[in-house]
Length: 289
Image (cartoon, rainbow, N blue to C red; front, top):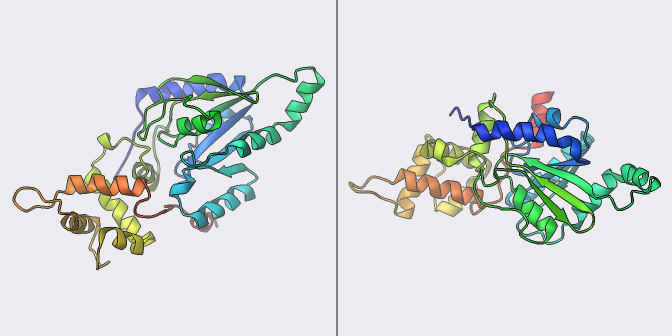
């Protein structure tokens, strides 16, 4: 599947990031913990220049706990500032503000020397669509400060949000990049909901996802859908087996592939099949060697 999605508002967002980054002290980039590399926009580094950048592996509750730890170690080995976060269940966002202040401690010290003790710190929040930026901001704010949703494209314009403790956040719409050179990147973004389902053949997408899950988590997949056999020719045969198990049948006795595809995608995205990470740092290190 050759998945590409770069609507006009994303080009506008890219310009907005570049124009506003000079106004902020630090960039917070949210990644999807299930696909950390695929969800890292390769243009953010260029757009944000030399600004300090904090990586947040968001949706950590949906990813494999062991892989979360390995990804933390991977990014720290690269010298990056990185944290795990769960915007839905994590109640205490204090570690994030403490990390930000630690990263900017020299700047804060200089400001204090100049008598600018109460100047707020300004952060820009960036990331791909549906990575949870608005939910992350709401958790930091302790209130519904940003519009959030479980689909890409909810935020369409920049929003300045003032927090207690001397922080100001600039929320930006989710932005991808014009072309995914690697087919796997496009698939991973579509599997996790960063690309709109409406532009994709969801039956084929679900079949490809099932092929991945059969390799990564066969036990969880078989348990969830009561599959007794793991010998399938391809993902469409798995999709058909699930449709029959769930009783999703249309007129003429044919399996309802479309309904089943939506169910499979929704259940993966909500971790009902299990906390499954699609990318491992070991795989990256092997390909780099």
